[in-house]
Amino acid sequence: MRTIVVIPARYGSSRLACKVLAKETRKYLVQHTYERALCAARVCEVVIATDDERVMEACRQFGAPCVMTSPDHQSGTDRIAEVAAKRNCQIVVNVQADEPEIDPAYIDRVAQLLEDNPNMQMATLLAPFETAADIANPNIVKCVTDANGRALYFSRSPIPYDRQTAGVGDISGYRRHLGIYAYRRDFLKVFTALSPSPLEQCEKLEQLRALENGFSILTATVEKALDGVDTPEQYAAFVKRYK
Image: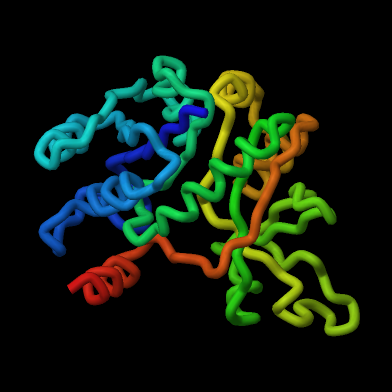
């Protein structure tokens, strides 16, 4: 089954301006992510999708295929769908551009979920929490699933709510969502044609659109979360680890 990775790379960022082109390591941030994705064993192609010529030029410099997409897209998923529609593939993995330390095995794992489950249209990954403070952090998305690993809900609030402790209980019972998705290519067209849903708009979580429209999201839990780069502090920490 032919699998590709599409990395949506938007130039603008509210918390870290033009972060995908940050280069204190002598490599662009998006370049680190691209090179990690190339190491995934199940992936046939890795392509970057952008709407900015500056990102396009940076990709030319380090030899990555980059597609200029419509500036009217409202999300990275819309950008991915445009690229995937013109590619020969069955599975499309969405890897965020600000994930310079992503484990290639995670890319393989999320793609394998769709390979092994032909009735599923969308898959993602979860990881254990390390601290109760992270569970309470609204910037870290939580997920609860059924017994078969299908997502029941995603939220910025702590879920499940532990009544005995008036909030967060044993942290082993919580899962954080990782921002990596696998889609069947044909499903991307269906998904992006749907209007933003009420829960999606409330939580600001695009994946809720799929659940609200009756689609299932299959999950698997991996060993640990690898934080992306959203702030100057996180980028400085990444640079320090890299050097």
